[in-house]
Amino acid sequence: MDPAHDNPLKRFSNFWLALVLFTAFGLASLVLGIGFNRPVENSFDKINEKRRAKIKRESDKAHAGAPEAAQGSFSKVGAQFLETAPVAVEKPEFVLPGSATQKAKAAGGLGVVVPEGFPVVAADAAVEQAVMEKGKLTYIVCSACHGPEGEGMYHINKTGPPLAGSEWVTGPVANLIAIQFRGMNGTIEVKGKKYTPVAPMAPLPLDNESIASVLTYIRNSFGNKASPVTPEQVEAMRGELGKPMLSPADLIPPGAGPGSKPN
Image (cartoon, rainbow, N blue to C red; front, top):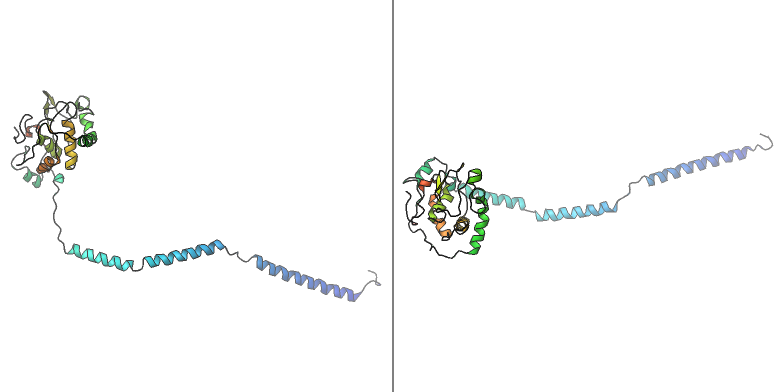
């Protein structure tokens, strides 16, 4: 460097100027870095936080006192149960075969018992269409063994005998109702032909109206014509529930009157 152009004062001032600029740049970078690194507050978070807080307050208010009220209710109900002695309730349809209850019910014979005052319906009584429609729907279950047209399925799978033209179907109503309550097993003769199904007919847990409608349907379908079956007749035969399964010998003869006894 030319000594003539070397100015110590200028070098000294340049040094401090550079130092000041460097320091200022560092401070500016620090300030800006802190600002940019600050977490951004999400307005949606604030809104959701307020909404959740509001829901919690409303929920707490709605459930205020609920545990105490529930405990009081449970205590009240529990006290009533503790003061009540359990009572055995007999369900005839669930009577165990061979049990003492069933044997007691069967005392006096296994045949179909027609109670005193059994309702009698005239042979030419009108058959309601609504009853026939309900019976037709219920009969769908029966058709698996007796055929969709009452022709029977014995010739196909050795199950149900025919209902069409059957003297048992148009015979004493008490037989049909008792079969619904007790089921039936054994060889039966229909229109001069004997049928021995491979499996017994199980009793059906139906209400009075359903039993009456399906029996009315089979007694007035497939070429059959007979008096309708009423829910009152079904109710009168509920004493048959719980008795042992019927055999054809336990039934009232087809040509007998409603108050007749089995053979």
